[in-house]
Image 1 (cartoon, helix red, strand yellow):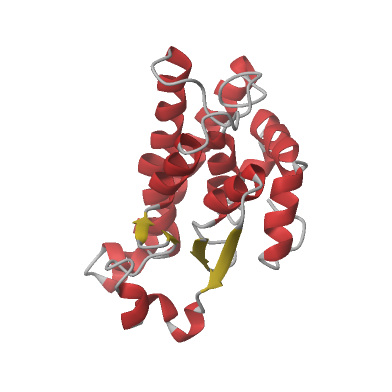
Image 2 (tube, helix red, strand yellow; image 1 turned 30 degrees about the vertical axis):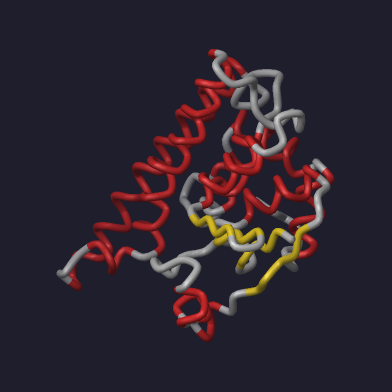
Length: 212
């Protein structure tokens, strides 16, 4: 059986949404961050980097949230969560997923864990402020795109990339200009939050509304 190692609200959310959407059997395995369970030897055997999430399926182990998302949709080609392989829409699907994981997520980490990105304790605030400025700009660019070609990242077609969008947008709640307050992005997030798989995933992780 598939097992998803998670901590509520962490990068496991997007894979969790997809698992709920696919309707397949899976089990959640809680990692208590308070006790650093994600750094314990047992978990490091699955993910030597000590990050969340990891997915197992028998002796198969996979980490990195975006990789897990792609594995799940590729394993269920009829799920409707990704365009057909080899199409231009599939290329755009990859584009947005990579933007979210390669551009948004690194600055999210800098925003929340600024002390990890400088050896100067006096520079932590500046690292966080710069990350916030970049994030607001990036979310604003997503807002512009959705205003021109929405309501989803691929236009009228919902995809797993939108689940990832919800996850990384949720992390932007503390920003001075949060994603939920942006005209088009906010509406898209509302649409995604209304999907039953999202509601089930939030409920099982113990996350209560408002979600973004």
